[in-house]
Length: 260
Image (spheres, rainbow, N blue to C red):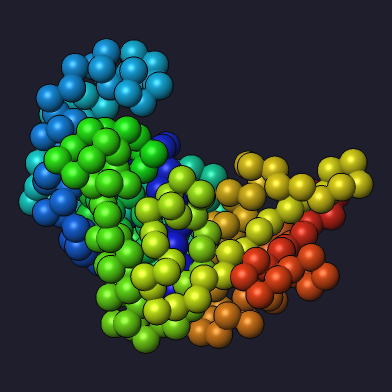
């Protein structure tokens, strides 16, 4: 099994790194093509392009300005530590064993607007570039045009390298759209996490994001190899619901009060 997740907008640049291991992004040549397009934007243009505050736009203009490979542990951080959103709080890489980290490194790809496909221990420098950003580039009007088939073929290569035969999609729609499932030799399973609210089960964004990270953590801690084993996921009160699941979509439910 091979997993894909989204990156996070929130970064923790002072995070404590609990491993000495690191790798370099596979698609750094593409990131080097994109970065000059970002570096030439004035802060107010970044604010408009990304619908963010002037303060955030200024921060990111500075990030682009300082962005400079080669990446080392002194000027960059491993992606799975640097990203700091809900998914990553659920995954909690800082408390995984070395065996757990190695599992992630082999079986997890973090999708990225700037870096395309990241392995968890790839060194990266801070950036903001959502996959949905309409950044005009030599290949078209947005990042989907820029990446074309590159992300798909990179995931296919990574899967074949470790002989993984099923893709588990834990990414958001915005990011998964950068993958072309018809060009993968593997089937895709998408886990869905629903929480009970007022008697009904629905997707609540914050909980669902955290659950994606927990789900990944579950696989890493248990060193799972077969998709069926994922149905045992029971962290923080979730359980697999066969009745509302299909072959392609596996639904996990959590009852009200179960997570307190």
